Length: 337
Image (tube, rainbow, N blue to C red; front, side, top):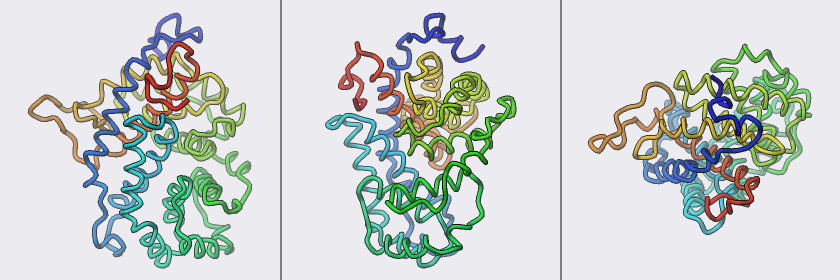
C-alpha cells in the first residue's frame, strides 16, 4: 500500500484528512526541544582545527544545526517558541565559531576545501557576516582551482547555492550541473535507493535554497517528484529509514503549487511514531524503548541529524499546509504565513 492510499479516499483525490496537521506541531516542538536540550553535543572541541579532529563529528553537526535552524526560523511565526528557539540555536552555533573567526582560520588552513564556505553561507543567508572571511573567500573563489574543483553534481549545486547566499556570482551555470544529477536526469524511479535518495533530496535543497524558494524547481522535476515521492516515502517507512523519510518530506514541502496533502497526511503520523519521548528520532532501525526509565535512548551521533531533519521538515510542511488550509491559522500551528 502506498502512502497516498493509506491516507484514505478523500486525500487520494487531492483533499486532506488533517492527519498531518494533528501531529506536526508536537513533532516540531519536541524535535527542536531535543536539539536545544542537547547543545552540549554540538559544542566544538578545543582542538577542532587540528588534523586529527573528525570534521563529521564536530563541524558537520554544528553546520547542520545552523542550516536547518535558519530554515525553521524562516518557516515559523515570529513570537512563537519554535521561532525563538531556532534563532537561539543559530546564535549559539555562530558563537561556537567565534562569530566567524574560526571559519577564517579553517579557510587559511584548507583553502582548497569548499565546506568552510558552505558552513559560512548558512550564517550569511541569515545575516551573520564576517568581513575577513568574505575577503579571503572572494579571492579563493576567483581562482581556476575553485571553478574546476571535481565533485559530484549535487555537491556542486550546494556550492552554487552557497555562493548565492554569500552574494557572489556562481562559478558556473547551475542548469547543466542539475542535468547531471540523478534527479535532474529523471532516473528510472525503481532505481531509487539510499545513496540516490540522499543525492535527490540534497539536489532539491540546493536548487530551492533549502526548500524556501520552490519556484526555482523546474516543472518536469516537480511532476516527477509528485508522481514518485509517495511510493518512495512508503518504502522508507516500511524499511525504517527515518532520516531519509524526513528528508523526502522536506522535499514534498519544496514542491511549487499546492502541497501533496495526501502524502503528508499519510506519512507524518507514521514518522511521528519514531519520535522518542525526548523528541529524538533515530536515523534508522527499530525504535528503542523510550519509557520513563529510558527517556533519551539514542547516542547523540545516532540521532542528531534525523532529529534536526524531522524538525526542519515539520516546520516546512506546517507552513505549506497552513497556507492551503483557510480554516487553520498560522498562529494555531506556529507556521509562518
